[in-house]
Picture (cartoon, rainbow, N blue to C red):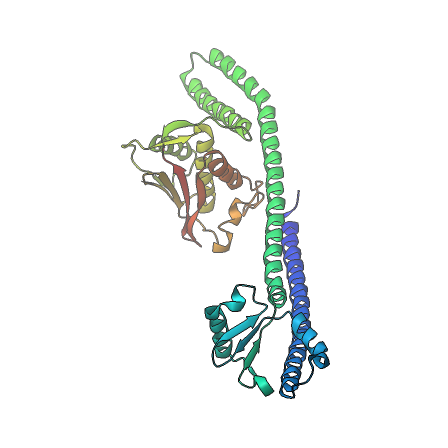
Length: 387
């Protein structure tokens, strides 16, 4: 699997190579266009010399056999030409229909004059004729070639990046799913054993209420471990979604986390009054909320407040979890969801990465950092389709 550094390096190398290729292509295409322009200018001059020669010979009423070569030049000339005499416009090499289309030839002639192109005056018998010679289609194609190649190369680079990024993400998904399932499998055996021991402890302490209360709390934690193992086992599989009241889910996670937080931390969650339904997998969605609240507790160092608010539209339910912790630099709003990213000394930096996968891949929603200020706090947003 590529590391973040090597991915970044690969992007830079690919970008630089693309720029070099584009620059070489642009320079070479311009060179070809310049050479073609020189060649076409030579053809223009040759054409005009042939026209003048024929006009001069016509004045002398010479035999046409003496100007055969000039006639061949005129007949073989391939660049578009427009002639303007006092009565009409005529053209060559514009296509059969356009050669005789007065409106087209007039507009083309006047447009070229407006752009600063100077017509060549005829001589001799053709002294009343103005001639304009235009670049051929090949010149235009070559001038456009760098742009066309730039577009194609950009599409190629974008496609390459997309394919590599897709393959990398797919590989990451397989690794995380495999790791999660193996973790669930490894947890299964000791959890089952602990449940059996809990039953034995209950029997031995049936007449000791104080001990039973402690055992009851231990049993809740063992059940929590079983829930965590179940969450891990669902990573990589298609989760079963069910309609859930978002307020019930928030209330449930608040009660659980509040018992495990410092007394100096206050929880301000919406009252469970209305019914606002979302389609979620309860185990996985509670994992996301738990992750956000646990991160908030770590960021506040045991003192502050955690606030949850809910908003909704016709199509979406919007949940915001805010804390009064250390905050996140603005440049790291997206980085916090990258696997392995962590500002804490302990942990693998997978919590928010898995939360993002759960919300976006499994629930077709969106999770993001809505806002954050250093030493003031952070607000995470979760958008989910409304049931």
